[in-house]
Image (cartoon, rainbow, N blue to C red; front, side, top):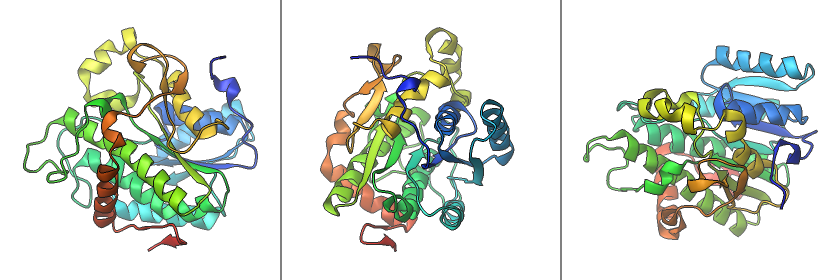
Length: 304
């Protein structure tokens, strides 16, 4: 079978995509490729100046690209709500919601609502955003929610008694792994609920393997090894783009690099980590996420 490449991306004309963290790294490359293929792309970014630089780079390649900026701070659920309100005012529907933004192994800190930063941004912020925008996704049959996980999910564990790392004592890498495992559990549970409600929206996921991005600014060893081992963001974005645009992708499909230990290579379907196959954990995480964010996915019509 031929490798899946940028040329494999179908035309995206008359489609609208929202990409979080689209000002740099794989988020930028995903937004760029979708725009070059004709999609209207909203770059959902905390830093609007960097987002404007990203737009300028896209327009330099395609002067008529339909790209815009929406300010989104995933560490603040009020910002998530405000951003979603703006998207609903500007767009009748969304075809692609790519949940890409994240933080990786920072020093211990909290979100505006008091959640551990990695769990709060990488999972809870995106959970709330997807809930708020689900009505727009339902307006576009075949729409997709694409969640970007990580190889770190392989060592992720969910401690439901201490999701915010208050009792255990914070350790950056296990906390990151927990948030990335949560991404996969979210994808599985979202797809289960969409199927149960007979909603024509797919939830897929991907991970970028070992890709050099600004996300690793607080991981010095990773940055040292990047020149030897890492892919460039353009290549690292391919699993995300396949999860978003491959016509043959099914609900809860997961894509990652095809090479050794899934670190490099073109994107292929892969299995989620074993811990993501626990339906009870997925359902429990969903309930906890609803309670913490106060966002209910209204698969019967909206967000409560």
